[in-house]
Amino acid sequence: PTPPKLPPLPHHAALHKIADGITLPKTRTSTIKEDIDSRYLTLVNIVSPAPEDDTLSTLKGSIPFDDGKNLDRLSTDKQNYEIYYRLRDAVRSLQQQNGTSVTRLRLTGYGSPVGNLHKNEKDVSMRALSLKNYLRENRVAGKTPLEVTWVAEDWDSIRSLVHSSDMSLREAVADIINTVDITKGRERMLQDLGDGIPYKYLLDHVFPRVKRLEYTISYTRHGLNTAESRRLFETGSRSLKLSEFFAVALSYPKGSTEYNDALDLAARLFPESPEAAINAASVALAKKDTKRARTYLEPYTTLPAAYNNMGILYLLEGNRDKAEVYLQMAAAAEVDEARQALELLK
Image 1: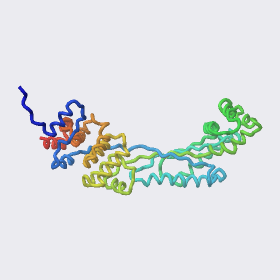
Image 2 (image 1 turned 60 degrees about the horizontal axis):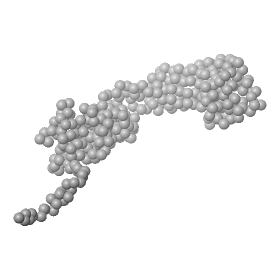
Image 3 (image 1 turned 30 degrees about the vertical axis):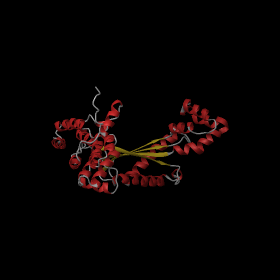
Image 4 (image 1 turned 30 degrees about the horizontal axis):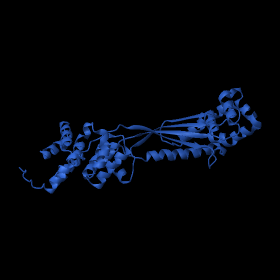
């Protein structure tokens, strides 16, 4: 008998039938209803970074003697005067930063091998003492401990400058510096080399560059209170610690422009901080920017502090199963937002 004629498949069923033998990528669709979206977005959390101890830092600089003011041609008193004002400006630039205290000022002068070595060594000890007394008398850094030393002939810098130069007989000059002791006629051999042409180059282009005073200012940075941190943040300062950015963010309404900006900026300034990344991800999640949020969270998926925001991220991406896993782990870690999210899912 003739088999009964089946009715035609509905259009959508026909499409499914055609696709039976084709492997198609599964499109994930969000399982969150539009009317509860906003409630999940409010359940992102931020984590507080550990408070930082006072940190000891240094500011380093150099005062050349062969610059526009030609310090090398000035008397010792005038040199001390010029050095004082340059150091004072550097110290004040630190002292004007809230929470900063200068703890030590260390100076090292460097000379060039012009003249008798023994006389140079004797002169620099007097030079160092003169500068130290002047700076102390004029309180360049208040009562901060001050150390001044001097190197009579800075052959290390001379050697480096020779290697990087295009001077005549450079290799021969370098060989003499490396193999002939200072007390065994090094400078005399340089003077005799190549009819004195290389030595003249040293006098004109190398020796003046090594004469300088290098300084190291050690200072500590104390923590600021929220009001001070907020004031600096609003003036565009980028010198805040991570914990201070966190305090600034919490001083603004959650979700406000200032709140978001503080957490975003902290993540850029502290790219190695898990807390900064997790907090910046919370800002991205609140804006439904899942791509940006995943960039922040991806390196920290195994970190308990990131579990809640990972759960919210998976919810927004439409993966309810993984979302529940992360939210349950976050709830076990006593994150209140995760408990609320799980209740909503029920």
